[in-house]
Image (cartoon, rainbow over all chains, first blue to last red; front, side):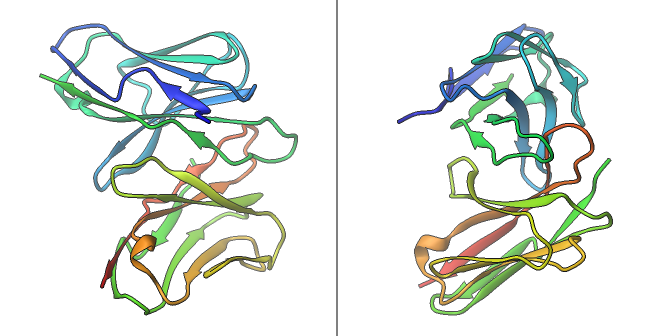
Length: 115
Length: 112
């Protein structure tokens, strides 16, 4: 019954490495999102996509990029990982509806540690 | 960008007591959503409110959307230990993209 799958639950990477976080949804949702969650800072939007090959910057896109080559898959890329990117990363998807945002379905999250 | 204030940030209650978290926006919202995140888990969508003054109930949870569509509340009656977690509101200001802005969340601890 899993609907949004994130490739790794825990990940440890070295500073300067290129990191790929993968997210796949099986609900045929148009919209996909990447958030990071840090204590005391809540959920902060990194990037989102409302269609294949489309992407929009969120509130904190610096140091990240994304790729959406297929509708079901949205990848987050850390070009050169740094210790301040140690965080919980959450992927989410939602249906597209004219007029307002629909509820999100979140993946289980990837806890990334950069050493 | 859209700002949404959520209070309180933390709340400890005795089991059986009521609990309320509030969400306020400076702008009129298209709709507001509520999520629950259990400790160690991910946010789970609870409900969406769309109409001015709307009230919805889910068992012991009551959700309200203000008349001006700028504020919302989640009230839990007679809390149980299973209610422990962080409750987030998420505001949609219909700014053109189908995304919401999350509040900081209210972390609820229930003391047995």
